[in-house]
Image 1 (tube, rainbow, N blue to C red):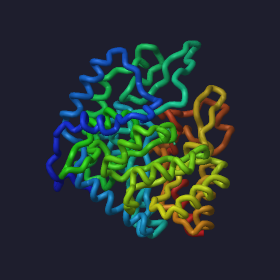
Image 2: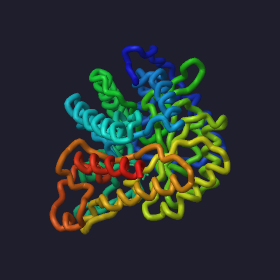
Image 3: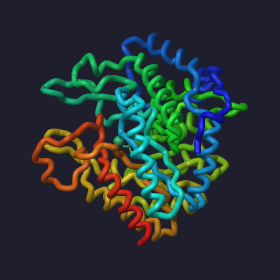
Image 4: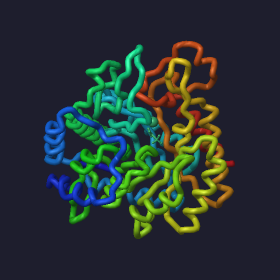
Length: 401
Ligand code: PEP
Ligand code: CO
């Protein structure tokens, strides 16, 4: 398990300019979700500062994750990837990090005991601060406002000033992430950290060269969400780094493109380098077999993970998101069933969860929509503590059937 105490020295050489040059080749489709800052010079100055900051994690802990993911691929371990949809800067305290890590470890232990397998725990923590969004604007109290894009871009409060992107937030995000990772190391939490690969300038500023190879030293396991899946830029960046990576796949994902991206990012077909996180909702029965078949025919080595949350999001009459437990269970059981039917192996779950009891972001019963729900997530609905336990137990049940 990762431990900073034995880590090698953190390199601080600024490789971001040379990396951006490698990524930014002719013909590259730029990222659709790019943020427009009022003061681009201030933004550039922040990126320059980031490139001089010490790394957050060590390359050594990335090797450790690689080794453990090889075990997952060999079906000697399961994978659990959990945490908030979006972390808030206000959560970057030792007390909250402690509560979150206790919750993650409890879920990991439950899965390990129930499945009789070791579990690799990867948490959506220490840097999950940027959210790609489907809409750029939203209506709040009769006024159109730019949407919240994650604490590293703008503030959550519903007013114009808060929603203005502020480049200083990139530096604040780095500080919060660093602090959380240090706290996790301090309490010896046996987990790796993960965030969605989104703002490439942030990612490249914290990508460093170690023994001639590039490592993203801001997170162990960057993943690409479905809104970024068609960005050549992001794939080119991910193809240049040594970290294990993950792609999300939805019902609309183009299989040929997916194969191309997998080959681009893993030309040697290294075991454990790529995880595919499926989030398909009802479309899973039709789509997953097609994707499984294509991966198998092309003999590509991937770790399969099910995200039963993101394709099962609905809006209540106030426009607040919710997810029904029954839909989450349904996607888990279908995933397990289809993998078994194709002689494939589902290695784990990707969940949005909270340590808090009593949250009503995800619900058991639509009757709960008739009253004001206890909702604290900055964006997507998370499973509360009790629901998280239920979902893991259900997954164990499906695996054992
Ligand atoms: C997420 O994981 O929070 C997310 C936005 O996922 P997706 O890209 O699958 O919608
Ligand atoms: Co989410």
